[in-house]
Length: 513
Image (cartoon, rainbow, N blue to C red; front, top):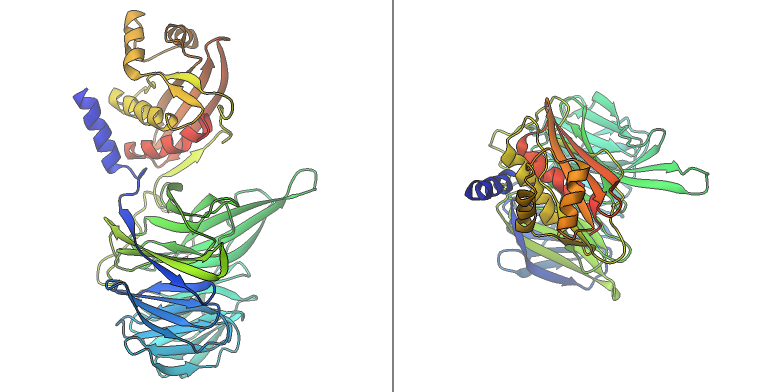
C-alpha cells in the first residue's frame, strides 16, 4: 500500500491535472462608471490600470490596495491600457481614436496622439520603449516614435480591421492578427511584410471561421487567436457554433495546437507568463465563470465563479496577480475588478532564455483527445451502485494502472448519479473468487458485481503504442450482463505524467457531474 500511495503522490506532483499554482481573492474593487472595458498590470506587479466605458482611466496600487488616480480624458470607452517597461508611463486608447500618455505617479496627461482617427483595439510598445504601434478599426497599423508621438509609418496589408498586434522580443518585428484571417509579420526597419500566414484552424470539416481576438505569450514565442467556428446543422434549420483558441509559432507561422470547447464567444483571453495556462470567460447563461485551461493538455483545470458577465482579464508579468473586470448583474451601471494573488506560478523575465518546449515540431507536447462521444453513459435517475475494477496495463508497470484506477474512481465519486463500492470490498471479493487483478472478462466482472450487490461494473485498460497512450473503459450492466457503452481517451506524444489529464477527460464521459 505504501508503494501505491507513493505512486499516487508522485503522479499528482508531476501531473498538470490540478493547477500547480494557488490563488485567492485579494481585492474586489467597485467601479461606478459603467463597464470595465480594459485592464492591465504593470511589469513589476505593483500597479493595476483599467479603463471604463465612460472614458476614465483608473490606477490602483495593488500592493497597498488603494486607488491612485481616476482620470477622464477619452470620449467613449477605453479599450486598451498599457504600461511602459519602466513602469513610469501609462498609455490608453479607445473608441475616440486618441492615444493618451499619462504620468503614472502623478496621473497627469503628458501627450495625446490623434493620428489614428478610428477605434483603437490594441496598443503595443517595443521592448526598449522606442516605438508604439496601434491596431483597431482600420485595415492598417500605425507606428510612432515613443513618447514623442512622431508618426514613423503605416503598415498596410490587411483587408479588414486588426484584432491585435505585438512587437517581437527583439523589437525588430511586429506581428498582427487581422479579422481577414491573416497573420502578418512586419519589419520595423522597412515597414514591409516579412511573412503572411492564413488562419485556417478548423475542427469541423467545411466550417466557416471568424477571428475575434488575439493574445501573445510574454516571450513572444507564440500567438493565440480566438476563433468562432460555425456551420449549418443537418437539416439546415440551425447553426452550430464552436469557440476555439488556436496557437501559432511566431517564428514559423505553423499551427501548434487548437483548444476547443469554450462555451461562449472569445471576446478576450490571456496567456500566463509561464506559458502553461490560458484564462477565458467560459460562462453559461446561468453561471458566470472564469476558466483556467492547461495549454498543453487542452483541458480546463479550474473553474472559478464570477459575480457577473466578464469583459477583460490579465496576468501580471511577474506571475503574482490575475485581474478580471465584470459587470454587476443587479446594477448595470456598476462593475467590479477582482484581483487575485497567485503563488507557485513562474513569472517572465526578458533577460531569461525562453523557448517553447515541445515534444514535437508542431505542438506544445502531449495532446489529450476523447475519441468517443462525450455524452455521459450515466446522466440521470437515482444513484446507481458501481464498482471500478483495476485497469489492465499490458506492457506498463502494474502500479501505473492502479494509479489510473484510483484517479478515475475518485473522479466518478463526485458524480451525483454514482455510489462507489469501496475498494477494500472489491479486493476482498476478488480474493475470495480467486481472480487475478488483471485480465478480467465481462463474465468475471458480472460475477464480482453480483457478490458486491453492484448494479454496474467498470472495466478498463491502459495501453501504450509508441508515444500514444490509450485509456479505455466499458460499463457492464450486472443484471443483463451486457456492455452498455464504452469510452476512450488518447494522448499523443504522451508520458506517464499525462495519465491524470486523460482521466480528467474520461470521467465526465462515464458519469455526469
